[in-house]
Length: 207
Image (cartoon, rainbow, N blue to C red):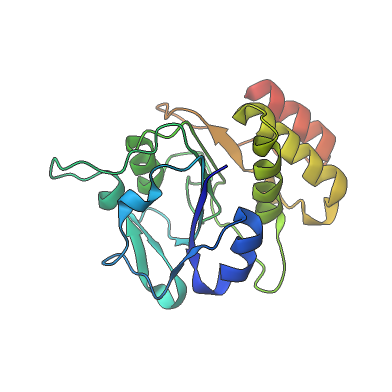
C-alpha cells in the first residue's frame, strides 16, 4: 500500500508510525514550497496539520501555512491534484463544524476526487507526547485497508478495535470521526454515545 503523510514538524515521529512512511513536515515545507501533485498516486493520504474554523488553509508549527484550498481546487481553471482512488484521513481541526457543515478544506479535498475522506468535527485534540484516539483510528484503518477490506468496513473495524483495545483513548472528539464518500448539502456529525459498542452500532447503521 502506497501511503503519504503531511504533518506539522512536531508530529513527525508520531505520523511515521501511523502512516508507515516518512511524512512531509511543515516546517520546513510551507504552502509556497509544497507540491500538490505529490499527493497523487497513493492509496492512503494522511493529514495531521492545524485547521481553524472557516479558514481555507491548514497550518504547521508556529502557524506556518502548509496548504490552501486553492492548491487542492484551483479557482483559476488550472488542474489540481487528482486523488482518484485514494482514502484521505484528516486529523486536523475543523474539517466540519459542530453541526456537520463542511469547511472550505473538506470541500476542496472533494474537488480532488478521492474515494473517501475520514475526519472529525470541531477541534481535534492532539497529544504532543503520545498517541491519541484519532491517531490510533488512523493506524488501525491502515491495518485493515492493507488486509484488503473495503474502506467502509475498514473504518468500522478500526473504530471497533479502538473501542476494545484502547477505551482510554475514546474521547467525544474521536467519536465525531466519520467516513465521507461524497459531499451532500448537509452533513451530520457521527453519532456520539458514552457506550462505545452503542456508538459503533449506530455508526454502522448510518454509513
